[in-house]
Length: 380
Ligand code: SF4
Ligand code: SF4
Image (cartoon, rainbow, N blue to C red; front, side):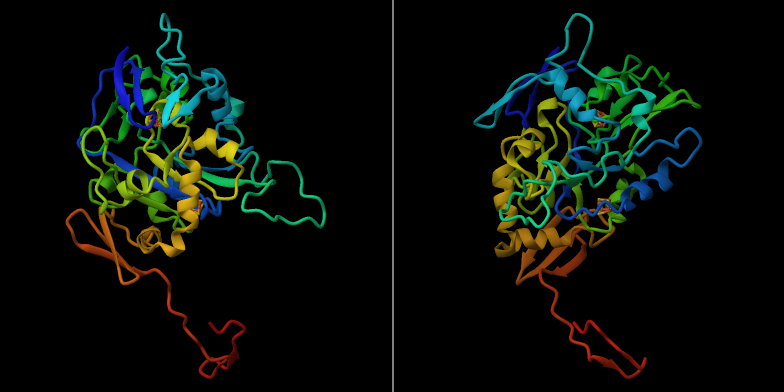
């Protein structure tokens, strides 16, 4: 095993290959507070990439209800049980990653290969609350809700230290130099399903009729043209931002880069289960109403600061403006600025592609619409 630096753990860790970082790293930020589980993203992805025979069960993008949802079933619990408990001290993870928990004599990482039946229920646990049942007539009095759930959209994380890549005995999986997208070379894959077992996020899937594994391709043909992925562009809730994240090992975060601003500078977008050690590049703004112990396990030690900053966003023009830019243009916004309560987004060529006010001015309409001869119930 080689030693690689994992900034999400604040330390070096073991990884089967020596350190290699792409020139640019594609990254996403998902705001869980805004997701409504409409599954538009899941269907946008499915109709684009996985509508063929043998792909019926494949949701490269899925949205699950936490705490009980999971696709494949219990994907996170299975891996958490294998790596065992860990603690965080001053931002440094003291515990085992999936690579470090492995028996070094015969495995590269601890993993779990879901059985067929674990792929049968993409919406298991949907809208089921954790924390017990709300007594009749009771109401919630605190910022944290004792009975809770939230929606968690998931795609492949196009990890910095991908476990799927490390697991593949055929070297069929590679990470693209130009944008960090992780792909399975279909001509090399022999369907051994080691990636299905190795990925702790349950994202590679086996296509039985082609005898190969497949997974999210990060909509690379769109990214090559400077466009956002299907799941980002079609998101009804405008919960998703996409761009490129600076690897702190390679350079200084840029405050005008939307992803750097949220991930590195304000630190309100956090990796999911950083303790797995793969360096995921989908970052989540955590739900603000969920009990702290759950969130701490899922998103690491920065979760309370992230929630505090998010709650204060209405008084923070830069943050509020940036969050308004999510879902406001088909182009990837590589830079942004907020001036006089207007947020501007620019594509990779520096062209302005979005301009949105932080607060929409109210539009007053007459209660009676003469042209249509109707009365309006909602006049603002
Ligand atoms: S389209 Fe957006 S709001 Fe709808 S489920 Fe997907 S992430 Fe959530
Ligand atoms: S999420 Fe899984 S499939 Fe995607 S790059 Fe990471 S380890 Fe590989």
